[in-house]
Every structure is written in structure tokens, then in C-alpha cells.
Image (cartoon, rainbow, N blue to C red; front, top):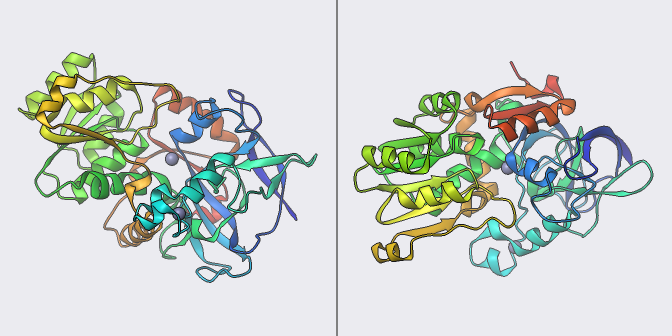
Length: 377
Ligand SMILES: [Zn+2]
Ligand SMILES: [Zn+2]
């Protein structure tokens, strides 16, 4: 058993408390990682605000990060102490129905443990000083100096890739690149509309360009984020306003509608906007995560035009493989993540990052858990 500093959520809607936790050593098939950096994602905030169901605390949040392997449990072959890794938050089992069908992002075994806040054996490695078990968040819980994760969650990355940049790959980049490639299958020259240009939306813009999209229309309320979207390859900025005006602005740029719309907000109005800007026969891909209980409605008559709408979760494919390949591309300078970072902080600054997310300010905040090994600057 060791002690590690972590930011703990004790109750929904209350600030995180940075304190020392007890952390058990990695068991068979698990890895102990010294965390260098972590991204702050809206999904962390959703859970902290109580939007993802009841009873999810105490918990250590953080599901996007990178660090260095410190120790491995029995039977771990893929990584060893000293390896730089980025976290993948779905350790696909390879054996359940979803995995057998090639939908490893929907692994049933991993989903059950993730919702229970445990590792794959049904237990937690984290405890408060008084012995109370602390939940893991999506196996990762990297708002902490150390974490114990299933080996499948620790994906080896090139040593040349700075860990503060690698920290952004495991949620935002995998989610966006996979949504574009595997869910929507964006093709060369197609017109794409990205609605919401926060951490995920900005990656969707870059992923659409990577896929060869011709025009990328970026829709966003905040002019600063629209400017970031343009810097990442958006061709046409649309300042979001009222629903009708926004719809008209997109359709003025793409008469007849766009080939693909991506929703990266997680709200009924923006999901409806994604539908409304589609050309006949096109499909909207919803990546944003809406709070539990949110519903949306669509004009049923428009189904005659064979429009479609689908969700995309964590890249709609093999997240670990996609993470490894995006790490190679980023290290080689063929994909850029650094420019989505608008703020850096430490473990004590996560609540302020949550406040910015609530207010829609800035894009990604990176938590430099270990500033030296994160390599920022
Ligand atoms: Zn996330
Ligand atoms: Zn599975």
C-alpha cells in the first residue's frame, strides 16, 4: 500500500478536495502509473454535478491523461516500468458480445465495471484515510499523482511525445477522430458541420480536415473558440445565436445541407440543429454527452428524406489502437493537439477549470500533476 495525493469528489456539486489517499499496488493484469498530466473534460464535470446517475462518490475523476509506468502486476506484458503511457478508458475484454462484434468501445464487461466505479475485478484500489473505498472513474482516475489501471488502459506512446500533449489524446482525440472515421466515415471533399467548439469540437474540426473534408463549418457562441476552430482548419465560422438564425447561416454556406453534422455540446437544441442542417440522406453524429433526462424531438416527416442520427461513443471502434496511432502521428508532427490548450493548472485548480467549462470559457485545461515530467513549456 502507498499514499498518493488526489482530488476527491465527496458530494455532487461540492468542490474537489485534494488530499492523501491510500492506493493498493497493482494486482494481476494491472499497472501503477505516476501521472504527469491530465485533461479536464466536460464528462468529469457532468459526474461532479450529478448528471451521470446516483451514488458515484466518493470518487477520483480524470479519464484523460498520461504518465510513466512505475510498476506492473503479474501477467502484464505490454508495458513495463519506465514506459511513457497515455490512458485509454475502455479496457475492452475481447470476449463479450460487443467485442466479438467488433465494437470494442462498447465492451460490456468494461461498461459494467465503469458504471460501478471499480476496476475489472469489481474492487477499488483507492481508500480514504478512514478506510472508506473511493470509486475509480472510467478505470483511470488520473486527477491524482498515481493511479492503478487495467493494463489495457495504459497505452505505450513514443518517448518523444511530451506527456502534457499525450494527456489530450485519450478522450478528446480518440473520440473525435473515431467519430469522423468510424462513425460518420467522412470522405474526401465532403462538407462537414461541427456544432460546439470546445475540447471535443476542436478535435472534430481537425479530424475532419485529416479525413480530407472539403469545407468544415464551425458553429460556436464564443468568438475566441471560433478563432481556435479556424486555426485548426475550419473553413467557415458561424457565430451561434438563435436557433433559426444559426440554421440559416449554416444553410447559406451549404445550400441543400451538409454531408455530415457533428454535435459536440450535448443539448437538445444543438442536436436538433445538427439534424436541421443535413442534406437529404445524410446522418448527424452526436458526440456531446447530455445530462441524464434530456430528450430531443425531430420532425418525423423528414425521415422521408432518409436523414439519420446516431451516437458515437469513444471513437466507435478500437480506442486503444486509435490512441496508439494518434500518439505516433502527434509525435511525428502530423497532428497537433497543443493549440487546444487554453489553460494549465495543478490538482488544486480543477474546480476553476470546472467553472470555466460551466461558463463555456476556453477550450481544454491541462492539469500538470507533475510539471517536470509533463514537459510543458
Ligand atoms: Zn472526456
Ligand atoms: Zn468486451
